[in-house]
Image (tube, rainbow, N blue to C red; front, side, top):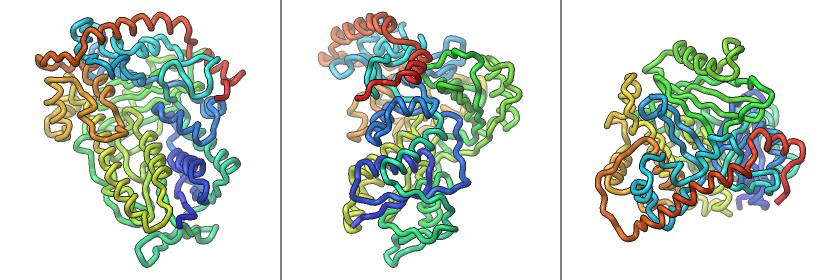
Length: 510
């Protein structure tokens, strides 16, 4: 019987996994081994809306989370300069699904009714609400409920500390702060135990590798190779900074700002107490010093221009890829142990959530059934990693920028996954639909592909007009969407104002 689960590594991946397993699988003991010296990046991180359900299931109140993690509301992503690089080159990928998209072909309706209006504005009023700096809910709404769909911007270090405290005090997770010095194997190749420097030997029935890029169990112990994805995702460097606000009442952006640069892009995340900003780039096209200068020039355009030259910058190396297998014998990898693709579209924490969710739902009761679950897990997550690579690459192949070699090479045919090639050929004659994706729980739905495709000006050839398109229904949905912008903009508070109210009064319990 599976009675004891050992998680190697803390951070967001380890603690989210521990919290979900402890909340769902109450017949097992959960032990987490965390090194006392390994630090996280902690420059600011974005989540998907799935994080609301995750935190709620673990048992953390939204009020506590917002107060303790410098959290703010994220309603999607805003892409600046990705298509042409001109001053008006902006599009949105909001979290709220297109209004009426299940009943009709909104793409056909948009093209017939208002093709000069940006696609996201036509089918979702969230883009306008976000640009106005408004929150997705108000103080009278219950925790984790919202008028619009939303995730969060957060401080990853503080999230780890909050989850650690909650798991230890309220969920009974045993925590060992020590270094693992040896992995001991059983006769059948399973991991039998982990030897630590000061705490002795830790035995377990099931081991979860959340040791980050070191991948101590799946990578080093089992030797499972990383499938290199640098052909499709060439960015291999990050320079990141914590940026203070220049005002006591800052304009807290509702979206992650992703601004295209000469050899990559800059993320700009507004937390409640500061910004997290980072330049993701390829060292094949720009050196570290030039990239740092680009990042500082970007920051000087913002509200913190007075102290930009004094900001401490952190340089990191990244490698795009994922493991050939995530689950081997009685060990599964979650988070960066399993893989990492660049931080575009905030897929890292989402894959942690999806992994932990599947493990808790499919938790094998015995070692005998574990191999069946492992095969299923590996199949599902191989597909999910491939879809992440595909979707992120979509943001580059549609660009028409030719001002630097980076952007010219980013859309070269040989850098595009074959699966994306096929989809783009198909979408020249019809819009993306659910038929294009085979998983029950897709990483990115067809609506996400539509937001990026038509936000970047993708133009299809003449398509067949079908009765099932219900263009008239779609046009009415677009009209209602335009009306909702005015109604919601009158009722929703600004982000800063709502966060201040939550700090003082808190949100209503569900």
